[in-house]
Length: 162
Image 1 (cartoon, rainbow, N blue to C red):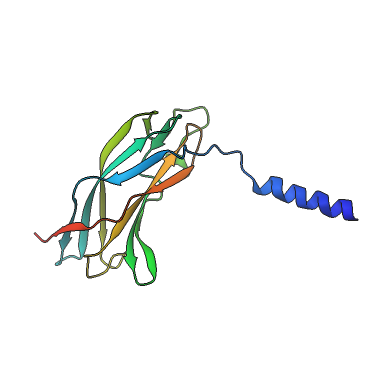
Image 2: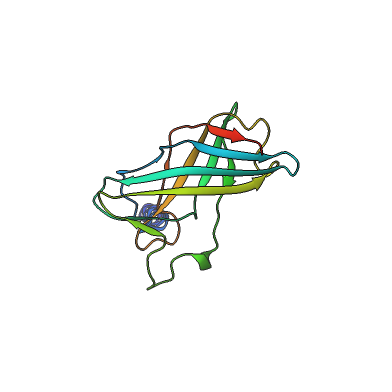
């Protein structure tokens, strides 16, 4: 019976482990320029633009796309999601297809503007000022869901009301 218990424990470890490749640990994300947030009080709409730079100092390529990203806000209870980009499996890499997203090779960087459009009450609340951070999902050549995430340092939005 003891050997049977050992076998079950071993099977559990194998079942819980993954062979999914992980993104290289030497990839960083940053908000290098002023992020802006436009608030539309009459409709409760919120449109944010986040200038994101992803630097790959690693030895393998990673791929970036909006899927698996989130925007968090610092609150008294800790970091809370105010926006999450979820994509369906049909939008991800198909077996034998091309890699998902934009490739960032070793020693390369990608600079892009991430657009977030939502409404107050959909994770966002007043006041809109405060510390935020962006969490970027990174893919490997064969991953169908983000293999890793990287989080920016806290930043503040320049808030505009048209």
